[in-house]
Amino acid sequence: MNVQRAEVTLANERPELFNAQTELKNSYLRLAELFGTDVRPGAQAAPFEISGELQYRPNHPDLNNCLARADANRSVIKARQKDIEIEDRQYVLDRSASRPHVRAFSGYEVYSERDPAVGPEFNYGGVVGINATWNIFDGFATKGRMQATRARRQAAVEALAAARRSVASEVRSAFFDLQQAERVLESETKNVQTADGALEMAKGNFA
Image (cartoon, rainbow, N blue to C red; front, side, top):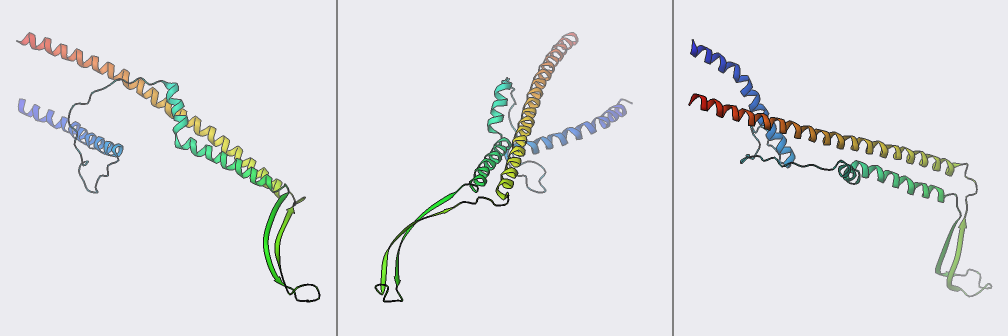
């Protein structure tokens, strides 16, 4: 009867063993992803092994510092800032079309005079000049481009604000998760210490 009970208990515990083995494999896969290590197709385990004992070192980062670093270093925020800079430069370019443009030119030319009565057969000399253009009215095309650029810039500003809110939310969530993990670890550590003490007392009673 005792043997049968032991077999039933063992059978009931096997699913927990299978779950633990699967979680261990998944943990190795997550570590491989963090390490940037590729796992070959068909491989049953990650191409490395874990040895030693994992020691927890308390870390208490400052939330404001974390938010500032994330705002300064996150690539999504930098990308949105670049979008605003691009639209600012595009606006300057669009606005320049409504202003006069002056171009200076110089050169040297040699040409043959077809009419000898006008002058020597071959003429040569330097050429210097100024060319000025000003589109006084272009059917509001320039104004339309400037309005479109301002609209895109405003959209880029709103996208930057949304990205900053999203990043700040992620940082705060990670910060709160860290605080929760520290509290859980502290509680579990006390439970283990209490269990160790109870085990020692039980051993003393049976000694």
